[in-house]
Length: 336
Ligand code: P6P
Image 1 (cartoon, protein in one colour):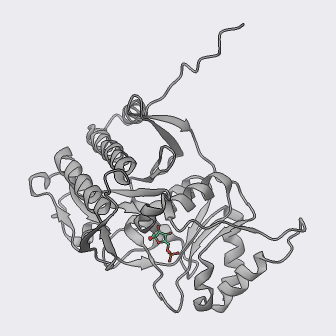
Image 2: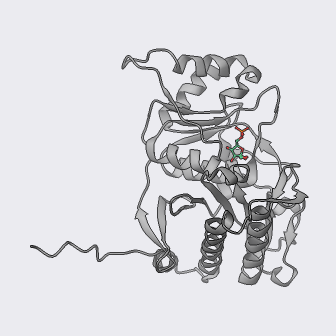
Image 3: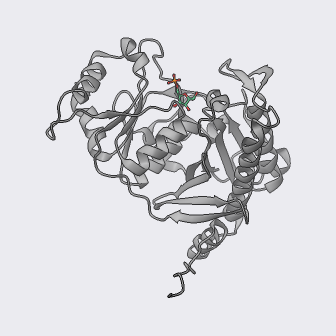
C-alpha cells in the first residue's frame, strides 16, 4: 500500500528556541541558553519521577519546606537539581523556589540578566498516589544595574519574559509561552530525549461547562463565590449542570483546563484569606499561559492576575483562571 505519510516536519524545542532567537536580531543568545538549561532540568526531574516509586524516593525526607509541608525526597532532589542547573547555566542571576525560604543569588552570575521563579514539584503531596505533578516556572528579565535585591523579582506578571510548566504525566508535557506570544506544547520523546512540538498555538475554548475547585472548602467561601458555584449546579441552557473535575495538582488541573476549557479556581476564603496558591511561581506564570491562550486569570477581587505585584516572594492569592466566558461569569457574580 501507499507509504505511511511520515511527518517530516518534526520541530524540537531546541529548534523552536533557535528560530525564536533569530527573530530578534538584538538577541544575544542568553535567553536561549537559559531555556536550554530549563529543558534539561525538566528532563532530569522527569527521569527521577519515573524512578521515584522504584527507588522509594517518595518517602519523607524529614525536613519541611516554608509552608511546613513534610518535604518528600523528590522535592529536595528536584529543587537541588533545578537550582544547580540554573546556576551552572551562568545566565540566571537568582532563583525563587517554593522550597527555599530565601532568594538564591548566584554570586558568580551577578551580571546575568534573567531571574527564575519556580515550583520544582508542584502537587508533590500527590506523588505517592501516582497523580501527575509538575514544575511551574516564570522567567523575569532584570533591569539594568539591578543588584539582586528582593524588589528585582517582585514584579507583575505583565513584565514576565516567558512562563510555563512541565507536567510529568504519561509523558512529560511542556507548555511554554513568551511575552505577547502564543502558547506551545511539547511532548518529551524519551527515546531521543527531545521535547517535540505536539500542540502548536494552543487556544483555550471560549467556554466549557467544567469547573475545577476543591468543594471541601465551600463552607469557607464568600457568599458570592458560593452563589457562583451553586449556579453551575443548576440546569444550564443545554439542560445539564456543569461537570466537576478536580485533581488537586495545579499543573494537571491547569493542563486539562487549557485543553478542554472550563474554569479552575482556588478561591481565597475564610480559612485562607490570602488564598493558597503562590503568586510568583504558581498564579502569575499560569495566568500568562492562560491569557496568551485566549483565556483569563483573576484573583479573588476579580483583579487581573497579571497585574498583581507581590510584596514578598511567597505571597499567595486567590485565583480563578480558564475560558474567557467562564471567568466573565465569575465576575458577574462578584461585581459589587
Ligand atoms: P487542596 C498542591 O499541594 C497545590 O499546591 C496545587 O498543586 C493544588 O492545586 C492545590 O495545592 C490543591 O490544594 O487544598 O485542594 O489540596
